Amino acid sequence: MASSDALSIRPATTRDLDALARIESEHLSGTWTRDALADELGKSFARIRVATAGESVCAFVHGWLVADELHVLNVATHGEWRRRGVARALLEAFFVEARGSGSVKALLEVRASNGPAIALYRSFGFIDDAVRTRYYSNGEDALLMSVTW
Ligand SMILES: CC(C)(COP(=O)(O)OP(=O)(O)OC[C@H]1O[C@@H](n2cnc3c(N)ncnc32)[C@H](O)[C@@H]1OP(=O)(O)O)[C@@H](O)C(=O)NCCC(=O)NCCS
Image (cartoon, rainbow, N blue to C red; front, top):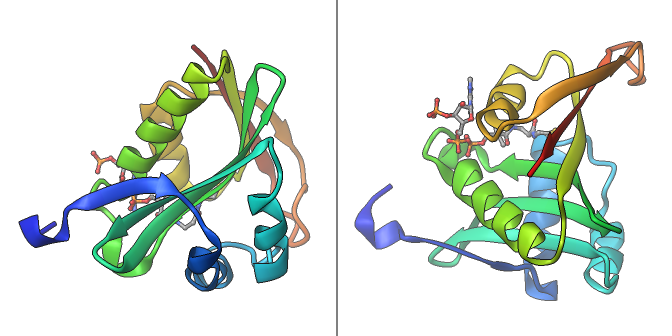
């Protein structure tokens, strides 16, 4: 990352919705539409954080704080920003913030074939809890992972 592209991490706002919806449709399942993401911004338990460089939204993470657990719903980095430490920086900040809000555990589910995401989560100490066989509509298994802090 060039020094002129210093990364910032902040809560998402309505002005980010187009960028979030684009990343969601291009790099995730597309389940979270722009309207659904807009609804999330108004929920007290939902958190969406964005990593930006200048005016660009490079990545976002979306989760729910439920009691003392953080449920990580999605994380994605826009293609040109991949492998530059963006998701790592974003998740690090997200987890620090969640722990500061009383979370003692984080949970997620990920496609069993998603090597990059699984490697990322393992680097934060996530372990495999269970496999949901043929969980996704294409018949793929889901891996359930968690980390306790
Ligand atoms: C998974 C994803 C978010 C990683 O984003 P990123 O910004 O490129 O990740 P980082 O550069 O911060 O990488 C952090 C670590 O993740 C792992 N990782 C990331 N991309 C990887 C890849 N292509 N292959 C293997 N490991 C990878 C590595 O452990 C890496 O650490 P390293 O660079 O020191 O080896 C990105 O590939 C993505 O958006 N994928 C599509 C969306 C998705 O599948 N999200 C997860 C849904 S559960």
